[in-house]
Amino acid sequence: MASFNVVTDSTADLSPEERQCYDISVVPLKVQFGLEGFRDMENLDQEGWREHFARGAWPTTSQPSIADFIACYSVLEGPVLSVHLSARLSGTARTADASATSTLLRETRVIDSGMASAALAYQVMAAGEIAAAGGTLDQAERALADIRRRTRINFMVDSLDYLQKGGRIGLAQAWLGVKLQIKPILHLEDGIIQTKERVRTRKQALARLVKSALTDGVPEKACVVHFLGAEAAAELCEVFKSETGLDPETRQVSCVLGTHIGPGTVGLISVAPENSHQE
Image 1: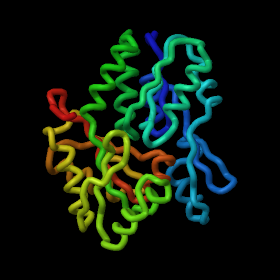
Image 2: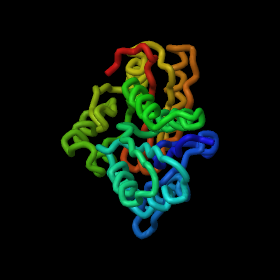
Image 3: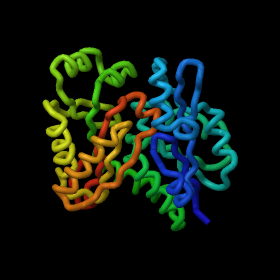
């Protein structure tokens, strides 16, 4: 029996098999198209998102409620480690913390992963392994901090409109990207999305994504992620393989994340080797 329970949210992009293998509970965020509401990656997947978007309604997103978290925590027995999307991108971790405080049912420790997508999944699965091995919450928290230190998230969006509408970048940056027909390389640093560099073509952008992942040597883990961008993802996998000889895994980004980064987004998430000096 696991020494503690692991909880995360839908932006970790975990497969059903991974949830079962690591015994992870997932609390979904939500996507709203007009009057229609959906639970992220439960009753709305990428193709469903595309269909609803094509009807003309601009989607919005929301974090889980306190009631959602309490419903999850209350059925678990034993301590809980709840690991979530960067608190600088969403209030999910803060709501989880408020929920844990209000239940007072058991020890519940909430972690701001500072990450999203596969970068969050890597921390969550590591916590699941530690719990299965009988480890402590303190051991898990130290291990997650180490993974976080070594993780890089770099991505290319097809359009900056989605980030601008969601308030993740300014109007001036979005206008500049369109006006100059550039491909911005973005990254997640200190839990927020920042512009890293700008290039002219998709080919150049994919090459820069791989170069960024190799800064500290061949990564310990690498994952190509995309939102309705399977073609670009396949190209990125080929570029990565040509540089390293390795096949990265591939994940589809959740609909909540996809709402903010937009269709055609592709990224490379990597974890540097343990002897890396990355900060």
